[in-house]
Length: 215
Length: 247
Ligand SMILES: Nc1ncnc2c1ncn2[C@@H]1O[C@H](COP(=O)(O)OP(=O)(O)O)[C@@H](O)[C@H]1O
Ligand SMILES: [Mg+2]
Image (cartoon, rainbow over all chains, first blue to last red; front, top):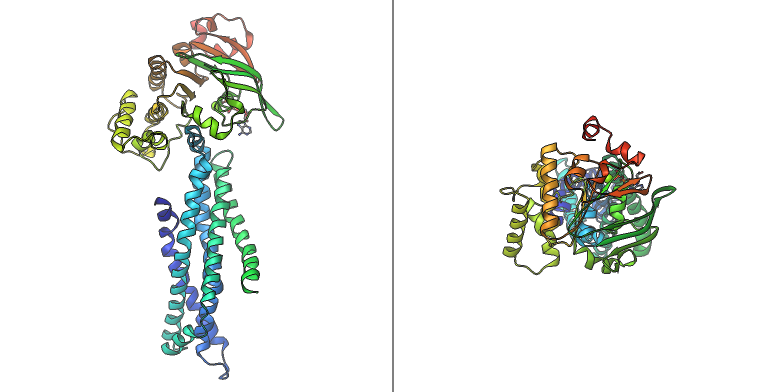
């Protein structure tokens, strides 16, 4: 499916890059914050994993994707609107909203969880790389921390968030693109609105979902 | 036959169409003319249901189109072909895929049959060897031809053309006009053409409706339009030296 390609595979590079570096930073920050021998060093691995799984990958990467995918969806649909391609679909007798937005929602809901899982792995790997190369934590200690107190519900929680965010990104930016009025300038405006509104929605739903799922 | 009865449409407090009543006959090029911004596109989009009308009726034969739901409209829309002002070709599809698109959506034809039909339509608009190109790779005149080919792919009973030759050189514009006129007669289509181009008016204007200030101001054909004594119409028709010489 073209949409999976456009919305998903296209983002692998940026997601991998950001995740690796953020994982590295998280690990180094943790290591510097633990300056008492009372806290075991494997805590670095443990906390890095928890931050990545619970918050960094599902939320921050979704925000990045809101910027990337959201602007793409909104400008694609906006351009189709102002060049009357959406009218052309409707005149053929097809419901253009369903025809254009639905496959994109499906693609994002399927692909984003894969991207987020990949992001988690890359971030944890980035943390390991940073910890080991700087000598802040031994490889085995870090890995011990990664495996410590693992609760698979955390992954479920992260995936639920990811799917909801994916839906929000595509439907909100799709909406703004679809209802663009005017010309090229307005396509730009729709694209911006799509990104801003889906980012805000992610932040708000993050709080709501966290309250619902973890409290 | 298509008929608009007392159709009004406004955007906010901008009254664009004011009780417009007009009939479009089969086998003829029914022209809607008027200045830029006079509401030609809005009228056309009201006729095909892309805009909802505020009051009045749109009829296709004896079917009241303006009261239909999306699903009921679907039936009539399969009998409609439309050529949009900018062509409105799908950027992500090749020329051939653009023409086959309506067939893929509404027929059970095999890919080979669809391709055959697409090739027929493309040859009808004299466009060969462009099948695999994308809209971004072809000229304005070619885009219009592809759009015509797509519009006639489903053998429409009704053909709508919004400024089919805007942005084209006079020669290409004329070729497109003649193509539309030929297809109209060949398949006895009810064709509605928006234009502000006097060349088209003279060339293919079987029946002409002049829209001015949101009202149907004048009706006639390409003979009577040059002899009319309607001052607003004359202002439009004889706007250039060339047309003044014609008189
Ligand atoms: N979607 C719309 N929303 C608001 N106003 C519109 C819309 N489409 C057209 N109009 C207004 O309707 C009037 C007629 O436009 P139009 O039908 O495009 O003119 P033309 O005769 O050049 O095709 C213009 O004043 C335009 O501003
Ligand atoms: Mg127009």
